[in-house]
Image (cartoon, rainbow, N blue to C red; front, top):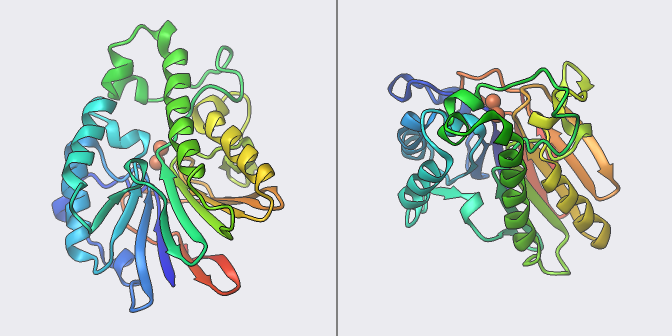
Length: 274
Ligand SMILES: [Fe+2]
Ligand SMILES: [Fe+2]
């Protein structure tokens, strides 16, 4: 079985999108496409998902990234997406889905993730993302409450992910986790180096990282593979013997494949295509 992974497409004009760079990799072996967030912005998001679902001959599993909420608020965008895709077998919002058994003993789960101010030093950081201007939840909130909001969002992601991990059978061999924000500083790449104190509050979801570390430590026989985006720079981080994170390096604006994921009797392997 083969899965195609793409991330951070940042598509701004659905009607003008040429899907062929992504879809040319789809063949008879392809089970699904996985998108790890920053697909579009809120006004184009549903149309973009529909466009891809129309063109692809396989289901599209996805999570949302921070840019997908631009021009709206988090609750409203999430509700619209959930309402839109429920009952549509072509589109699966992993944040709103229970574990999916991809193959015998191999499961897929996902959650959006959020740079949650848990890692690095939020107070001294010079970084302030456009999220604070483009997402209503932050724009309408006094800046001295932003940090608490980030923490809450990260914890919500971690809580949802934790409840999904609780459903993974003890005899599972592999869990594939799709999320937008790298869950560890070690997986937050920029030009071959990992993040610093300034960027990690906004580029690492520390609460999700804690959940994943605990799950991997308490389930040594289950291999956990994480795929994520958000930094637009690629790298592989081995966090534990059974926990590895692949971060994607999308340029945005062009729907390209990041990697091909193969599940066979040997396990789950990731082959970069970009
Ligand atoms: Fe992005
Ligand atoms: Fe992002």
